[in-house]
Length: 523
Ligand code: ADP
Image 1 (cartoon, rainbow, N blue to C red):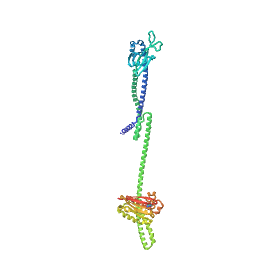
Image 2 (cartoon, rainbow, N blue to C red):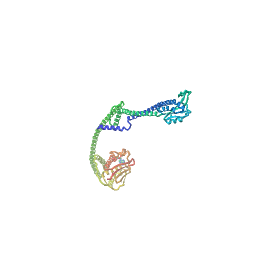
Image 3 (spheres, helix red, strand yellow):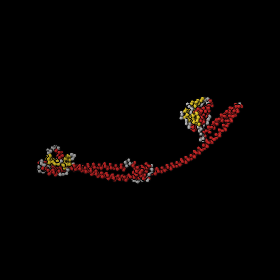
Image 4 (cartoon, rainbow, N blue to C red):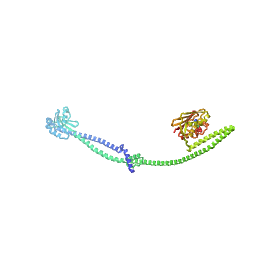
């Protein structure tokens, strides 16, 4: 089954690479074209040479026949009687290629003409009176025209056609027309024979050379098909080592390359397996470490939550007892002691605030902070806020401004937590502003309600804005340290906001003031 699909893939590769002409076809085409051109040149040369030789022979022959006729025509020209020449003329006409024969007097009068009328016509137009030659040879496209002078040589009755005798007398000419038909036929036959034998030779050549090329190129083609197959499938199939020396060398090099690729693949596979195994081990180790860290963090948060809870009780009782003692001191008029006890109360309050912050934070981290939702009017919330923050404004001689753009909707919120967030923002604004204004702006977009606490205080440097919501983070300057604090207020506010589905953001310009906004969705 595998072998069959492999074969199919190889033939597909062959088909795809069959678009360009194969070496076999190209070689065959070149050879056939070369042989064809040679054959044409050869046949042209042969027919030209044969034609030349044949025409030379025919002309020679024609001249001899004309001379013979001239020798037999002395009497006929002397008497100007056709009868005396008719036997000779008939004889001449029986020669092959003689297409016409006759006699002509020096005045140009033709008599005894037989055969092709065109020849007679040709000789009739000839200027005989001004002709000095004894032998005339002319031709048109289909005939040679030969004339041989008829000479009377002496008085004793012997007549001969001697060409250069001083005593001779020219009586006229024996005229002949010789057809070129045979010559043309010979040429045609030569060309036909060459074409037929050439055609057979070309077909034979194609078969023989084609077969030979096929045999020589088959291993090369097989090699190229294996290459194409490997290229398409990504496999490293080896080629058969066969054929001419060069092809064998190519196949050997190709196989060596495939083996190297196999080795590299194997190495890569091993490395990948090793890496995967290592990653698995590391991941397991990290998971164990993370779980351990999470467990210990949870234990820490739980411990902190319990501890801070336990710390609150004694501090609260300290504050209660200090209040009692203070009352007694006031009643007894020990006002110095009252002042000292006020300091104790203030510091105990601060300590309680810090413990409360830590308690909130540890509860959040331990996942024990829950929302207590209730319905609250916005106005009531603002009233509580203003009461809780009223003592903060006189401390740094700040003015408070309420900029309320909202009606009085009922909010479904954890009012304690929202109040804690807003008190923290107002408290920070009062802390970091001196003789300025702290504004609380309320806007209602109906999808959310926005509380913005805007102050005209020291502001926050742009590069510190991102980190002030992190735990224990304060703006990094000596000035801030002057103001005290734990760096926990904003971290807790942010966690509370997230718990309530709200967002908190800050905008600030150093030296000009800050604006903290809580965006609470209206559910
Ligand atoms: P704390 O105020 O106890 O230091 P917070 O988390 O409330 O902690 O505030 C973190 C820091 O952010 C502050 O220490 C202060 O540097 C900066 N900050 C907060 N509010 C303001 C503000 N209104 N103006 C200037 N800086 C502020």
